[in-house]
Length: 398
Image (tube, rainbow, N blue to C red; front, side):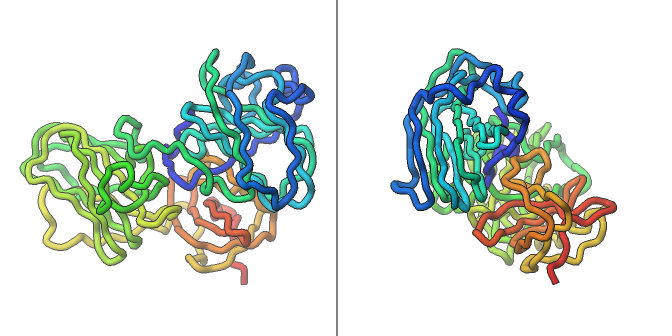
């Protein structure tokens, strides 16, 4: 299933894909009788979260229906649950919790479709802001054919971060998010550096049983280093203006952890570094924070931490007049807000021209855009691209 930013990253939320009803109704039947019943919900409903026990899976292959990127798995023809929503919802979250990999599909009152795969660990979730009143048909699919797994549908007016997660913690078996490199004795340049975005949703202390290793990391390594030969000395460090956690699974399979504050680097030294794979995580001390960071490696312990500057110039893009703490306005007809700063990531919601946001994180540069972490008036957060080489999509508010 989709493992984008395999982080989990955090802060991961809803992929809203709106397609004509005719694309899917031949195989998914919104008019069918709900297998697990029909519920009526109004704002302020209790208990919250409201839960419905279901079994995932069915005979309909979801991928050929083209309900959205990474909308996979197998579902029943008839809905699993039908929800009748009263007017007035500011936000409503649909989330599936299961020990297995599931897909969440919703047919909206206007006949369009939403689908999500992995958002909260392996849990799919969909978030609707200003949810329209009416009938919502819900399917819970299984990843594999002929697979039927126990699951729970959670409904809440809170965001998915307040609901159960299947995040598995840092996993060396996953592919690194920002790449990998092979190094040998005398590697150049030294220090070897790589800029990346640190943070995630997995509490390192819980998964490693080390309370001193505080911080939140992604499930997949951020970077991997393969040593082609033993090194007499190796230092792996992490620079960031934010308080960060450096977590490494070494060539011997052991875990190593270092934490920093906002005035220092996190650093881990190997007096004799065995050849093999070193998986590296850059974590944030604060849940939900994703901070621009520089990973750097040397064959010796630096006499003093090297001086780095986080690159926010974003070569090829228009210069920015924004900074953290500013208010900004959407300067395009429809702006996508993402769970993480990648255009292939989950879209949390869309904002219309003139909508106001607060800048609470960033900027972060990738190959295409300068990204800012924004907060809406209801507390929802996500990442938005400021613009491209010719156009600004986010402008100062005053």
